[in-house]
Image (cartoon, rainbow, N blue to C red; front, side, top):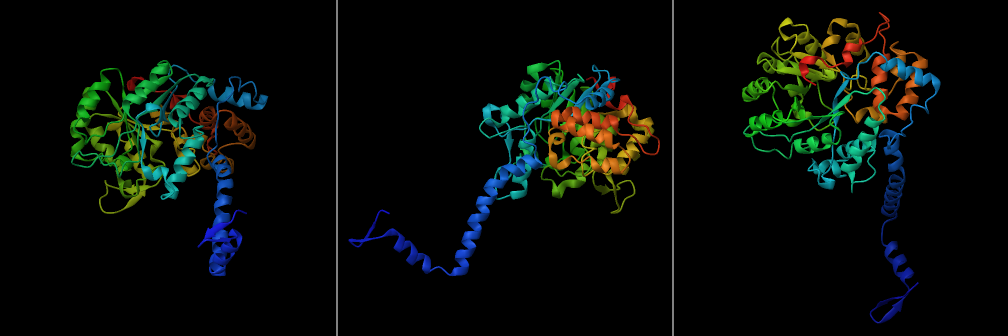
Length: 437
């Protein structure tokens, strides 16, 4: 080793290190070694963890259907054979980004920092499920992966790309601290322009913004028909009178509101979960606005505002109560994204399947990239509940590995109520003409 020169004397560096090390308590040295070993193990195991939970997806080959086993090809054909591609629309696919490649997208710094480990890992899972390898061109890779999936979609149909607005305070000022992420309307418009035949831009406008009405008019003027809200994350109270002018403008412009319902777990929303209460959308409906209740409120509980007091009721029960009100027929629709994820009740799903009278008022959605996230896809419980056969489970596993969006659609088409033996009608996946899509 090269010597260290201290006070004009040549001293071997190893002896200096040993003397300094001797002054450190043995227990502290042991802790240091364990810490370094844990960091090393985490560095080695982290990529494996992301692949296991997130998917680490890459582009599907153009001939992916030909590579399927005959059994799985038959299952896929059965799932799409009676769906009109002109009316087949996935109304719920997310585009996200970090601002690379000039996208204008943004995510909260805590989602990109180990100082908030849960949110950081959650965001990394989203990137992995979206086929994003690194942050340098994350936004471009996100779009490229989705385009590959759409190009290989044998069912045809179209897909709605969702913008996502910031959170705002009640006084109309921007609330960055409580914003999870941001996807500009212009970016969604530009991405959808790549293929106007297949891609539908969906804007997101917070109703408390000073320019909210002007923003609606701007995008309605170029043909946009859907507006996306996630009230729990954006800080929107759909029952607030602050939304009245917004609702009036939506009705005037013949636009439809696609709003999250139920509790929200994908992004930070802990102190605003009540904003996802489906009953709070009564105000929009009573203004004559068409509303699509994303996820059919299939997760969590909310206050029963109709009963008063502090009684918590299943969010799904509240949603179904509204669907059964005759005055909302033609205005309120349910949306099927995320209803088959691992954290959803199979009993709730069975009820949705058995309510044949509501199927013409349901629309399909994938909530991409969640159908490509290994951590939330579990088929065993569907078999245990009698909603799927073991043979169908095997075919769906193969389909999932080949094309997650085709898997999401096929899974919903294959589900059967163990009581009636029937599944969702085709109409549950075809958009009503009144939505103008």
